[in-house]
Amino acid sequence: MNEKERQWKKYLWVLIPIIVLWFVFAPPRWWLNLTKSVDLTDPVATGQALVEKYECRSCHKIGGAGALKAPDLNGVTERLDEVAIRLWLRNPRAVKGNTPMPNFHLSDSEIEALVAYLTALDEAAAQKE
Image 1 (tube, rainbow, N blue to C red):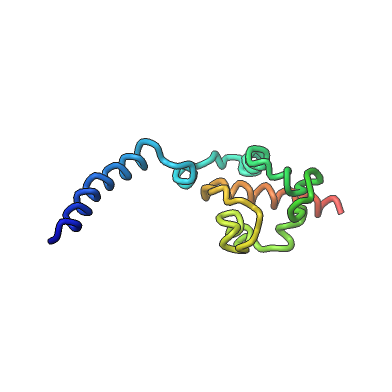
Image 2 (cartoon, rainbow, N blue to C red; image 1 turned 90 degrees about the vertical axis):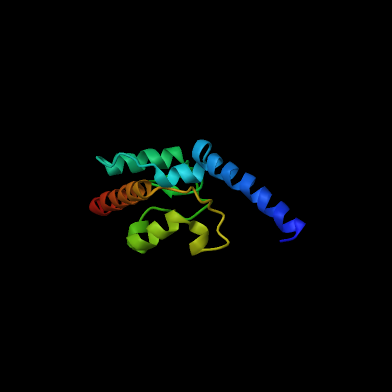
């Protein structure tokens, strides 16, 4: 083994523990979101709270209110199936690479709550018709 290889291995022995400790003690936001769960005893109310938390209406029209910078989400569960909605919420750029929508790194339970909220809105709108 030459001197450069020894030096490189020495750096790895220092760098790897630092990275591991960083993930344990100061994990990035996306790491925490993948492991956090939300209360799903009332998924519709939780979904509504998440729409406010992530400020979805700053771009989307949802339930008759909001902006139209992005697609109108009224009736979205009638236009798309739940699997497509879940995939979009999981990682919008994996579905459409040039989308301006950010990846919020939502947990599975957050996605379920948002789908429940959008479904409830669409069902309520359909009953009014």
